[in-house]
Image (cartoon, rainbow, N blue to C red):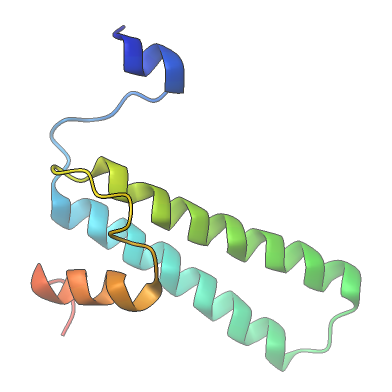
Length: 95
């Protein structure tokens, strides 16, 4: 186990392509947006609303963190949903 793996505990697959990483980030952002929209349409008490907000924040944080796993690491690649969609369009994932 090299130094980086022992620090982070992550075993990064070197064969993962930018397309796969971008697809995962896009999926995380879409799930976060869907949950948020659904939450706003339903009548929830504050306890459940707070729990759901934490879940959506965790999904967004995971999507943002995937920028490090690109072949050329870029921490700010998936910072917002719109930037992730733009990268996905460039890679041919969405139209």
